Structures are given as structure tokens and as C-alpha cells.
Amino acid sequence: MKKIFAINGSPRKNGNTAEILRDVLSGAESAGCSVELINLGDLKFSGCRSCFACKMKNGCSYGKCALRDDLTPLLEKIIQADAFVMGSPIYFGAETGLYRNFLERLFFPLLRYTNPPSTLAEKKLEAAFVYTMNVNEETMGLYGYKEFLDKFSKFPQMIFGSSEPETLYVFDTFQFDDYSKYESSLFDPQHKAEVRKNQFPEDKKRAFEMGKRLAQKL
Ligand SMILES: Cc1cc2nc3c(=O)[nH]c(=O)nc-3n(C[C@H](O)[C@H](O)[C@H](O)COP(=O)(O)O)c2cc1C
Image (tube, rainbow, N blue to C red; front, side):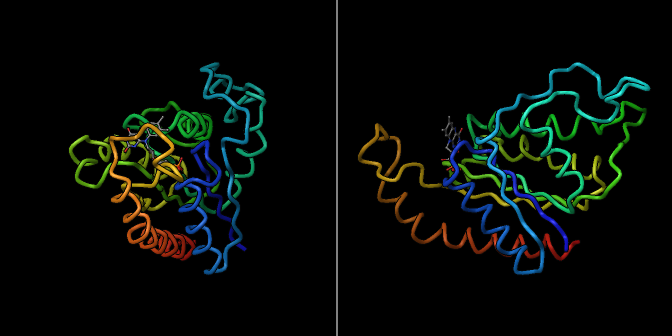
């Protein structure tokens, strides 16, 4: 059975990103895959420390991250899987630190500093991306989020030989359970409630279909 991991780069285990990722996994499961959701917020780990142990010729950690923390066993499992779907909320126009730290640790040990750059990954992994955010699609375009986020989507092709990854953007998300409890006059709570009621279920369906398509690539 093919295995797909979803990696939640939000510190919230039951937030928008987690919910959408669970739908992606349900879609993949319906197409016959075994699935697992990892909440990075549960783990203690750092980003790349630039020690270069993974690049040292004949070194005992060549091609592997030498750091030992909660990510160590997980990285081993992911590179043996068949696909992964990465999810992050947008924080200040970019991915969360959690998400970025994870990808540094996943990609860098496998990236060979050859000319042109090449990979040490032995297994093909398909990939997909999910981003959730407060802004709407038009504002995302104005702020240039997409161009920034697209940079990461090139790496699974280069490192894991994946086909072009799909990306799902989820806009205008519900940030609080009750807007009246928080200082949040920036937002129109009625509009947010409407989007939650009418648009978010559509986003969940798109996530499910994306999971099915991801499974069908395997
Ligand atoms: C620290 C922080 C920074 C944020 N910055 C942005 C931002 O720059 N643009 C945006 O659209 N949303 C921003 N948001 C909103 C989240 O991206 C959005 O609510 C997201 O859906 C939350 O996902 P989650 O429920 O999975 O945590 C920010 C939220 C937090 C907590």
C-alpha cells in the first residue's frame, strides 16, 4: 500500500491548515493509500544548523542530517514514503518558521552541491502544497505571496524527482472561534462567518479531490 504523509506547519492542531490537510488525506485514503498527519507543533526540533556534516566526503553523516531531535526519525520515515503534502498558514507573507525549519532539514542533506546541483534521494516522492491565509485571492496577488511561495514547489521535483506539485490556496480563513472575544476590528466577522459557511466547505472538497489526484499519481 502506498504511503502519504501530511505535514502541518501550523502550531494549531485543529486549525484551518490541519482541517484542509485531513481532507487531502481522506481523499488519498479513498483512493487506497495509507495516510498519516504530522503536527510539527508537537515536535521539538530546529532548522538547519549549517554544520555541513551531511556534505562531508566520506563523513558518517554524508547525505543525512546529523542533528538529533524529534525530527530525526520522522525524516527517515518520510523519505521512505511515496508522497507528502505540506501545509502552512501564511505568517507575515510567508510560510511559518516551523514549516521552513522542517523543509530545510528534509531537503538540504539530500541536495548535492554539484554543478549543476543534483540529489542523493534514492526514492521518488510525489508532493503537494496547501496554504491557508486571512487575505483573499486578489490581495494575495497584490502582495506577491504566490511568487514567494512558488519557490518551494520546485524542490520536490529537483530532490525527489516528483512531477509538478499541485498547490491549494485557501483564502479568507476563520482565525478565531468567536471574533467578538478578540481585538480584531480589521475584519468583518459577518463576512468571515459567511466565508466559513459557504466557501470553506468548497475548499475542503477541493482538498479531498487533490488528495485523490495525488494518490492516483503513485
Ligand atoms: C503570527 C501570524 C501572522 C499572520 N500573518 C498573515 C499574513 O501575513 N497574511 C495572511 O493572509 N494571514 C496571516 N495570518 C493569518 C493566518 O495565515 C490564517 O488565519 C491561517 O488560516 C491560520 O491557519 P491555522 O488555523 O492552520 O493556524 C497570520 C496569523 C498569525 C498567527
